[in-house]
Length: 311
Image 1 (cartoon, one colour):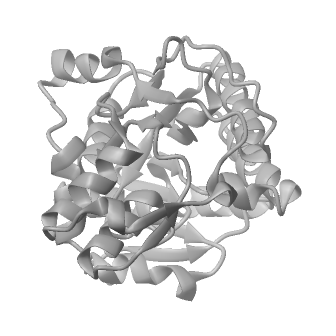
Image 2 (image 1 turned 180 degrees about the vertical axis):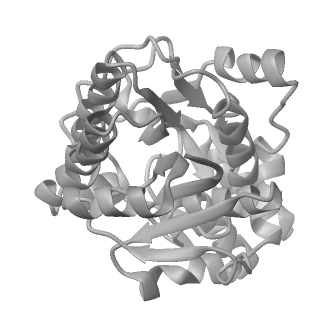
């Protein structure tokens, strides 16, 4: 293994920002993707498209995985691939399952069969858990929500724990809401900030829910810190709550506008069985503070202002 080589599976936003941070640390980064041209825009935005290597990969083909690992001999693999939308997962349940569970299993099988000492990290959503009094920690029960995206990640989460018993260096990384300027424009905070910036009226769903939003540059710094520990499951989030109503108010206030005049609530944006509170427990951020003196600084109103200014 080469301790300076990182293999990032999937060319989405999280992987792009992680690549940026790894490059700052003088690390080499290889990105695998099904379609290289379509996903380079994230890396172009961050001005690193010429500093990383892109390789085409179908995660459902184990022999291709084996060849890439053999070729690059990475120290760490970050599996950030997989269908990433609760709504879109309903349209293609099979692809959702294959991209999360089957792709992960193929990597784990290769690592196990070849007895490799690679550290492997799988990204998961906090939606896989059922909050206890609105808070989520790694010991919470799984959510009973039957959404394909949630079910696929729950099964993959258990797969990581199962294979870890073979002595493999496997990590489950669980994230709440991760925000950045590269978020799709239909995602709530970006949608609201765009509406506020250009004085447009927007349609929203339930604004009386509370969520835990973290800024992506802080998330990837935390990932790198935790990656030096022994194999374990981690929830990475600021652990701070903010409601949809507060997000609307803060965003439009930046432009000296009364948010009440610029939005309408539409039932089509409501989700079934949605929890009112979905916040990462403070245990998670306290672990980072205690072990690395790392503290989240961008959340709440600071995060809203940062998104607004970066659009």
